[in-house]
Image (tube, rainbow, N blue to C red; front, side):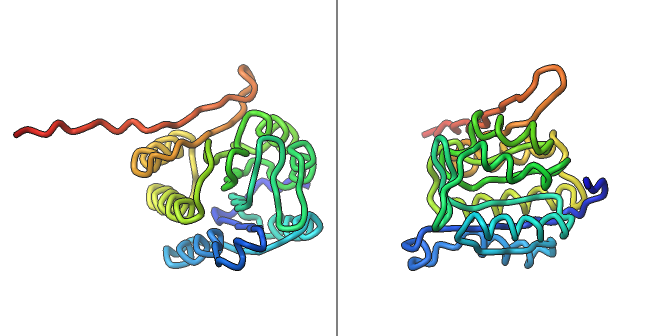
Length: 207
């Protein structure tokens, strides 16, 4: 059953390596705390396995939150949790009944590419998949995502519309020089990709 009315909240799922855990690189937890300080509804869950992912996605569905943010490691063909790895196709099948008319933000190095978008968007019917183009350090990711959500909810606390999304993503990329991919789908063009790169202009120094 697909829910038509959703809540503009951020549901965060995080999964790291044991080494990351030891170093306390909990980007998602930090993000959740910042969202809470900003008065944005959020829920945070830390998981280690695919089985836990399935259980937590049920909580996401029941929360009726509009935005799913997943922080984990990634590669060109898979995403990685502490104890499991998941292919893009399997990831799409897992998300099939959870992302209808919602948005997925994926903080995973090199995973937000056309292969992942093709595996996730058509089957789930989500509005978009957004995330970094290249590898990104946890300390940078935490600041980037916190800044992005702050701008988005400050602009419109109820909706993330495409034009506002791209405008604020551009601001984030300009500020941090970390390119982002934005994948969506249209009836005429199928899956479309917008790579957002820095548009900063150098200010000339006048002696």
